Image (cartoon, rainbow, N blue to C red; front, side, top):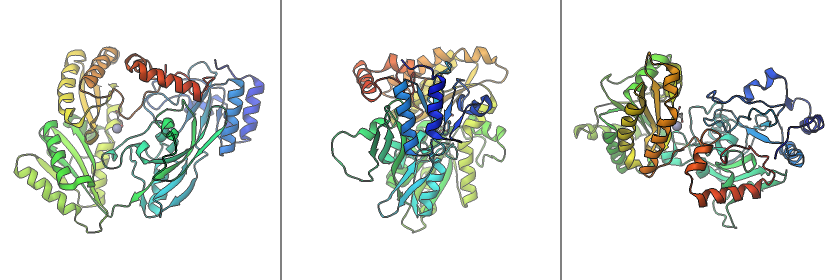
Length: 474
Ligand code: 2HG
Ligand code: ZN
């Protein structure tokens, strides 16, 4: 069982990182003990900010020897509380922001090596400066860090074309619970030497090791991108459009994001500088992006043709194809501001669900009916990465509804939503992870064989149970 650090342990940990490498005053540690959604507020005696692999390794060696629990933290933008210490005041936080170097960009091998504390945007920028694309893309990319993206196997808005963080990872450098280093930073496309250990750390939310750096895959930089906002009648029509566009563009479609009219209305109302360029009457909107690297400059014309053909057959109500970077940025801002607009609008209940893509319309129909029955004081705002079968099936409090009464619907609604997703062959955690928020649910719902193996792995990687206790595995 992890123990609270005594003064000697605190002194040893401070010495491991040196001056400027730790925080302990309540004001300094405040941002590290609360999660982004303010679901959890914990406590910690010490936030450690290692600057190097050696410092990170020493921290874990000390914590393991002394049985002190460690909570790894990146940009603290996660949705499930995985990076927040518990309330006991015994867990130290290891925040990776000072390990933020881009160690290498290798355009010939289409790879880069980046430290865990590098923000996603800084990694994208470094790739771009070398004429390459690092494609992971999320609303929080200016703050989210590569280490957190790896620890949560982040998804975002370009998964349809490029996959999730796991798919974008070639190698990892990880400090194990006892301070040993797994130096698996290879940038090979092919390496069949035994078990794929690195994959275990991706999505493990800091429970199996502390990721300090990664070798990531790069791609050709698109020379030609076209973005459109399309008004459609229904999720079924959106799905038909996706299939049609995939026929026309194969894997050049990078994003296919669905939003209901209410999401657009709330965003226009609450976020400065956002407007809906389409008709107020469109019930659903799709953001489509296609990207080509052939230098032919035809993306916009081809997307226009494809949407016109769909419209001629009644498959599209209205469409705006961005004719400038500013217009494409405005369309993206509309989509990426939906979570902030929902936050400003009032309380919300969130369900990060995925189903086979073909079941998305059914999920929306049946899920909306559940909301009407279980939380009539809420309004469904189901939006997101429909090209990946991933909906953020969120519910916002109706104007004038009692906040506490609305929030009290959460357990019953969540149970019904998760059951529905599973019945449709889906998952109750698509891209936001388990963390603390869904750990009990995971323990209850996971297959016993699968869960047993996960506990066995946890014992092998972290025999003293110091790494992020209470997260993922309850
Ligand atoms: C997104 O796709 C994020 O915008 C956040 O994953 C989703 O706030 C949400 O529910
Ligand atoms: Zn999302």
